[in-house]
Image (cartoon, rainbow, N blue to C red):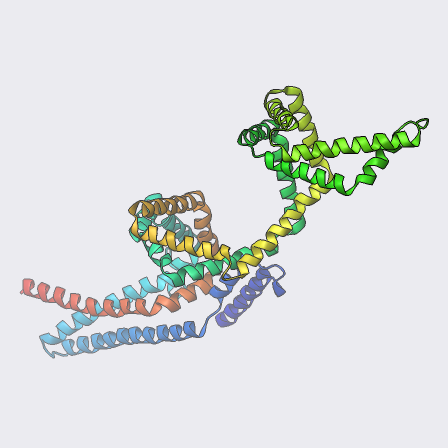
Length: 457
């Protein structure tokens, strides 16, 4: 009847476990893989469990043996076999006591001895959650404290080791390849529309937030002072002269077309020719005469304009309005957004090419950094402090989350299967406690009996 009841209870627990886990994975809880690991036995676990059973039989057999010795030695002593029988009986009696005591202690870890709910027994299944909390607190206090983390990391010497590792060309090549793969993956994941919107908004916001007039004024002032604008003037007047030479008829037609209707045609023609000659002469003189008055006037104009850009409020306001109009045009926004596509394509291409300047520079930088980290104590200390600071920040900020992972995981385990799992892994060693208890108990009983007999004699 008791066996039937146990089978029914086992079936009910199995159904409850399946319901909690969610059939088909629909209601699977986080940590389900861990739960399955704690509720299933691998072939290695089965082998360990068989080893536990063998050791249980050995320990129990030793108990039966000392019990049999006790019965025989007691019978022999009562039958007048001699003093030796009393010594053997005392030793075997104490051995039985030791064996039974240690059997009780070992069994009490995993279940109620003989099924009797004795207080403070079945410790692992009944105290499983408390053990998880204690384990989490132990890990938090002894492994996740700031002093321990700093001490451990300082003893490792991450800076020097990492530097020595990076200084090897093969390792630098490996890191460069991994970085290139990660970069390509990141650029592939990013959506162009999102990045373009962010880039466009950032450039526009930055441009609107900063006044450009004074900066342009300073730059123009320096260009004029250094004579950098003269090449531009030379190019403009040369192109203007060449254009006038090639488009003589167009210039004369424009002049004649602007004359009053009542003037004679030959007069319009004469005026057109005169205007054309003057324009051509002016362009030729500006091209060939570095000291032409028009050039000097242009220098003064640019100098005054550069000063107005820096100090004149009205000029600066006009420049800001012009900047806003330019940035607000759709063509400019499209140009800013399209810059991301060009940049991404350039970066991806460089990351894929092993001989690209980007990868060569990254590799050279890694080798240089590795050499410095391996040979310069100051750099090593800086890297070590950075790593220590990052690790300390993580463990101090997320200590509760880390320890709760242990606590919650242990709490989610099924008590019965957890007990069997633990017993399968450590039960064989625990059976040696029973064997040792039998042997030590026998020796202790023999010693006590010998001393008592000697004192009594």
